[in-house]
Image (cartoon, rainbow, N blue to C red):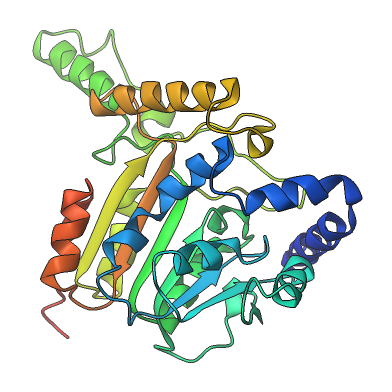
Length: 310
């Protein structure tokens, strides 16, 4: 399957979704803020909240084909210049007709038509992993932003908080002890352990590989672009079928919240990484208030080394 075919599949998906009468109830519930599913998603807009002392910032949302819902939620934080984009406009067109969004753009994230430094913040929530050539899209987002690029995406499950799987660290300790005490022939790492063996590959029915991200991977992208700061925060999530239709007093909400709390506990004691990662890549040095607000929200904010030859 070609990349164009994958893109076409995504466009067709939105046309099918828009035309399906059985989906109308769920569509309407997407706009509610009191459902179990809404609670899941609204937690993921923390970086936007950390910017809301800068109401002058403009936003471009990527992969925002669900009626431009990301742009609508960002506007709830007081930002006025927010434009949703997606590769297909079946639901965006409906959203504009209903007055829910002012405008939208049809954009292939892998080849954005905007000029360099066109918008302050590019915001991509749970869309990057759907793209067949996701790294191209990341560099495009970085190209068109002036202030920061924000990703909220599935986290690479093979990468621990320090960039190394915890099980790999334990194996390394065993190998070192075995070598020290004369058992180096008894315990020998496999080639997969020496070179790294990631999780089983995941693919979507549209044909694209499901990309996941890690802090170290994105830090290297920022370093290669000579960007000054990055910020990361792991976030837990749990989906329950039908949660879009349930309120926050329901059994579905209790299940979601309990599972998320359990995942966060496991992360905080170093047992496992979070299933999602919020990443903020800064094109310019962020103001002190942005840094302090991110840190207060639990983000790891890192000042990066700068290229001495530029």
